[in-house]
Amino acid sequence: MTKKTICFTGGGSAGHVTPNIAIINELDHQEWNIKYIGSKKGIEKELITKINIPYHEISSGKLRRYVDFENVKDIFRVLRGCLEARKILKKMRPNLVFSKGGFVSVPVIVAARSLGIPIFIHESDMTPGLANKISQRFATKIFTSFEETEKFFPKNQTRAIGSPIRKEILNGSPEQGRRFLGFHHKLPVLTIMGGSLGAKKINEAVRESIHDLTSKYQIVHLCGKGNVDQSLIGLPGYKQFEYIHEELPDILAVTDTVLTRGGSNAIFEFLALKIPMLIIPLSKAQSRGDQILNAKSFEEKGYSLTLEEESLTKESLKQTLEKLEKNRAQFKETMAKSVQGQAIKLILEEIAKIK
Ligand SMILES: CC(=O)N[C@H]1[C@@H](OP(=O)(O)OP(=O)(O)OC[C@H]2O[C@@H](n3ccc(=O)[nH]c3=O)[C@H](O)[C@@H]2O)O[C@H](CO)[C@@H](O)[C@@H]1O
Image 1 (cartoon, rainbow, N blue to C red):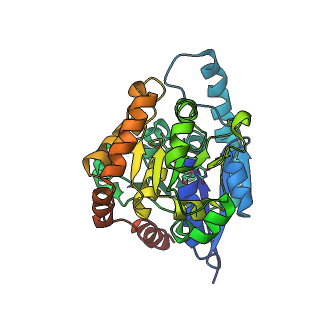
Image 2: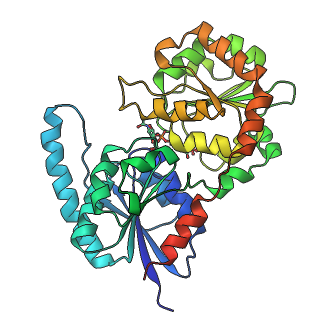
Image 3: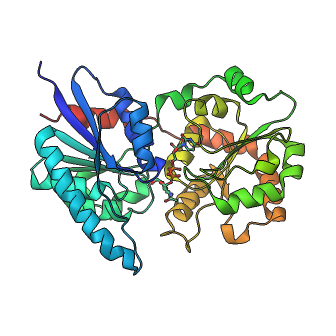
């Protein structure tokens, strides 16, 4: 049997990479040569190199929604990225390009289209990101995490399938988690995930309330690169990490409650694990507002509570966490009824159809 080749792309933040990893882990490596095209400096380089998938670099520029001189430079970077991606793809000759979005994916999609290579894209958020908005016109098939997102894409190419979740996330060991963290059984565990790149506002609010919080919980704080607070190292019941790799499943296995940004992949992972969550979405001032919509969708379905960043204070954080704890049984019950877990199976079925 001759092996087929699939080339993944996507990056900029972990949310544009971890779903690709989830699919890569489940693909038959005897049947598929698996490759990746990403940026030179993005987090995708570290995450993909770690799982030993051949990684090809291209130039990439940020796609900004506002006017900035950097835009001019970035237009040239994106154009250079298109040429580099075309050269790589021409040599690689993949049967399929699979994109998770993020700005590095656009040159890859444009190049793939110019070479007549089939393209699948996946959109994790409630509304399409700029990269997928551009890419959709070139895509053969489009998958979305949320049902509500289907309407933004061409009807006959699009299917809502949920979020491709890494299998290992669901198989953590509470004993190993507790051992790794040095936590006891006397207080519940609150995990704080400020998005894969960290969240300054959440970090500040948590640290302002740290003594109150550690009287009620043992805390794991995933605070983002460069955001560890040196003055709090060694505080009993408070563990800070810039980013967690293979220990994440074990940490989530001991987690009772999460305080999180509204990144789509993270909240779908917590849903799959049925962990009650308080979502503090990235504000409209800092984004297109997709996390606010993600959070709204989850809250309406009864999976979570939302606290808007503008209303985030020591007091509101305390009150909302108390409300979440009071109703935790109800949240867990509603999450248990949600139907998830089909995304990878459905994507693999579609990939298998590629000649
Ligand atoms: C600032 C920004 O643009 N954020 C976007 C980005 O978020 P971000 O990159 O934070 O993405 P998500 O929250 O969706 O996913 C983060 C992923 O990283 C993993 N993880 C995180 C921390 C850690 O220490 N270890 C670890 O493995 C999580 O388990 C998850 O799989 O992409 C998401 C998906 O398109 C969007 O919804 C977010 O709006």
